[in-house]
Image 1 (cartoon, one colour):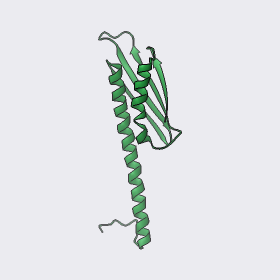
Image 2 (cartoon, one colour):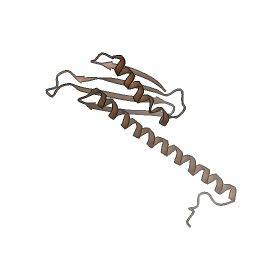
Image 3 (tube, rainbow, N blue to C red):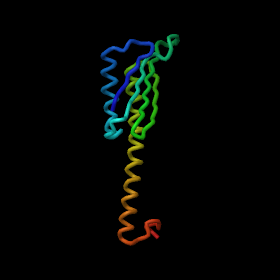
Length: 126
């Protein structure tokens, strides 16, 4: 997975870049073995004029390999926003991976029924 990081309203320090890379690269196990998957990450301040202090925003957009997912988080701490957006994206990727596995298993079960000479479109409990 290729990771592109963009900073808006803040300076992209090596520590922020390393933290984002570490967190987003952990999502690679859910995305699969696709080399064409790109994670576009944007971190920064949402605005400069909040009464309650700075509000940081983290956005992740994963595209490629049949995926097009987007997650965003706003928090008072930049690292907390990155953690929350990573957790949200992990949940979305896990859900999609589960759906693909279920579809594969359903197709394999149908093929077994065809090979046994059963009607694959008939419910099993009938």
